[in-house]
Length: 325
Image (cartoon, rainbow, N blue to C red):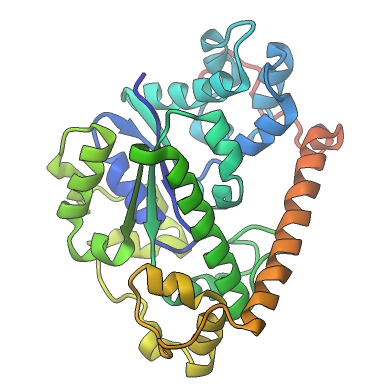
């Protein structure tokens, strides 16, 4: 199977729109956010015990929602395979169900797990979508509690979101330097302004034939029925968020104090273009986020490796049946 196509992007940066466009391709299956990759990688390390791995599959809500049961994945597993290969087998099963030959992923929460993803999928093709962080902040901060993950590192102010945005953008760019030609970066603003041009760039990057159906917004995605993705029911539309008119000036300046350097290097305008960023206050915000996110990720990994994970993830419904929907 050809290398996976993995979409990267900070939450609320348009990655769902891009995922829907790419998933319309006849060869590529990219499901909605998966969440399970770090869990399985932390639980099973390099070479999984297949019985334990299959048992864990029956506890994953995502697979259950896909209509995939452990018995559907089991024929693709073999003794001695790596955890990377075992996880890929799940995506291969999903792609096969969609009648497609290639798989991908789009899960913004993985932006803090990029070294792990790079180790798991060393041949992956990476597509990094960057959106003006101030517009992304407007979208993120209006989400109800729980929509963007339950962590103690969840941003609750514009400055806190700026710290996350800057940290994750730079992390993806570090991955890009390692990946070389397998990494492509594009801007959300360009995608919605010139969707065909940008999708053609992605297709060339991922060795996919261009298909005009990728632009067919009348093929409504199931994600469009989610309140946080209601705009997917319309064509790509520039200007749905505009920090210039929708964000308080003091909030825009607070964002710049934290992430003005990355805004500048990404081609976005600044209120104070001559300032040196991050400022001392911005560096404190970045340090705070680094401590909170690192502690959360270490705690989550420890929990996922522990017996408590199975106690809080019971076998779901007919997960042990013969694989029927």
